[in-house]
Length: 211
Length: 104
Image (cartoon, rainbow over all chains, first blue to last red; front, side, top):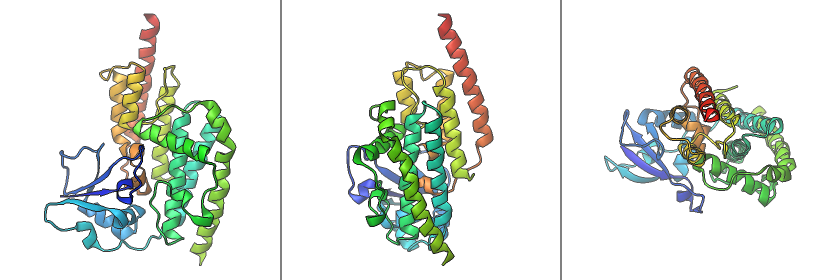
């Protein structure tokens, strides 16, 4: 069994909204690990992710800190760097689809506001992370990766970005005040504008693939 | 649609079922904490069918509900049939609860 910390804590991005991401690698089912607390993986699956060059493998490789090792060895470090990430187009399209579905739902109905805004935050963040890994070659696993892309950063006002982040925290950690319709109305045009940002980056991703 | 998007959609369908009913506060997500908040605010007892069904669905959709970085990965099993069946049970449990409350 190996236990690692990763995520915002390891990046020093600590805030009131931060949680603690813990990874447990074990052989088979281990009832000691609460899935609400740990991300639980088998050694075999971790090796698979490494061989696929999966973004999660790159995330762990770049920041996971060993907390406990039954054999006193750093399993992840000994794996070396993951394989090259080759699924950027596919992953970016997946997150663009997530974004588009969430916007469509926000337009069609008044319920599930928080959930859909949370999906948009997730889509934006993961889209940016995959882009940073696949195209920019400067992997960024920050919660705010979309705003740390230099000239390619998402252009969105602080209040509207804050609304998306707040919704993500509400939907996952259940902390905060529920989003009112008027708050959404204020930011709706900016949220719809995210599609242009994604389209621009997708054009780069597609062009890069052709090369 | 791929597995990842399908699972987000499955979560969306469950929230629509719950939020179609009148409660003090909407269900905001399917993480354990979001469900606990919803139960607490709306005074739904954890022992009620609605609660146990939600927790059951949540555990099956766990990767979608709270581990955002893992959502980049594609390691989701095929539980869609089971989740659909639980959603139907949830709809029935909510309807029954609403009918009991309206008869009081």
